[in-house]
Image (tube, rainbow, N blue to C red):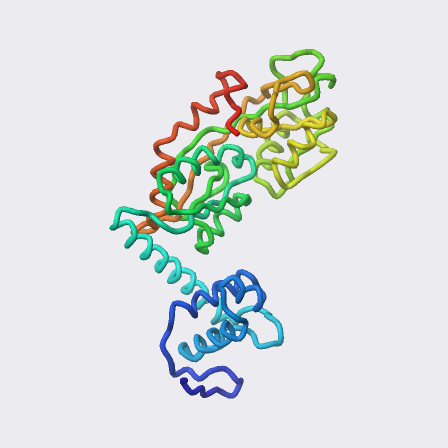
Length: 333
C-alpha cells in the first residue's frame, strides 16, 4: 500500500504516490452522480469501504483532496470537480474502446442510453426497436429528460444520444440528425364548446379559453406552445400541469380537460378521434418545430452512438407523422 503524506490542511501532499486505475475513476463518477457513498457503492457492485478506499487511493495518486471530508457526502472540492471532468471522459473512452474491440469481431455490445424530451417519447420506439433488432448484443435505457438536461447529460457522458428540439434554443457541441417536424393539435372532449361544433381547425386564441392540461413550464414543449399562445395574443391558465406527456394524456383522456399535444402523443391516447374526444389541428399560427437526434461531437465517435445515429438516418419518421395521413396512421404504439 502507498504511504500518504499530508500538508498542513490534512490534504494529500502534491507528490503522487500511487498508480491511477480506471476503477477509481468509475467510483468517483458514481459518487458524483449518486451523491451518497452507499448508493454509489451499490451501483459499482462493491462494498462502501471498497469504494471509499478507492477514492482515497485516487487522492493519493493525484496528490489532491477530491472529496470534501465528513461523515456523509458533502460534495467535491474545486480540484475534485476538475478530476471529475477527466474521470467522466476517461471512463467514457474506456467504454468506447471496449465497444470498438467488440465491433471488430462483428458484434456490438454495451448499453445505449438515450435521453428523450417528453413530447417525443411516444415515437422513440421507431428508433430503439430497429436498433435492438439489428444489435441483439446491446441493451437500451430510455430516460425522459428536458432539452436542457439532455445537453448537460451528453456533455457529462451520462447518455449516448438525445432526441430533442433543434431550433430556437442553442445546442452544444453535438452532431445532429433531423428526424421530423413537430406539429400541434388540440385534443378536446366531444362535448366541449369547440368539440360539439365538429371544427376542422381551431385557433390558438380559442384553445386558450378551454380548461387545459399542459406540461410544466420547465419543459421546452411548454415554452414553445406558450410562445404560440403569445403570438395569438393570449396567455393560457392551465387547470392542471404535469411533468410527463403520459400524465397530460391521462387527464385529457378522462374527457374533462383539453390539451395542446404534439402529433406523436396521439399514440398514447388510443382511439382518437372517437365518440368522446376530438382532435383538431391548431392554426393562427400554424406552427412546426424541428426534432432530431443529437450525439456528442467526438472523434472518433462512440460505436454505440454511431450505430444509433445510422438507424436514425435510415428511418423516415417524418412520413409516419405526416399530418396529411389518416389520424389512425399516427398510432405508433
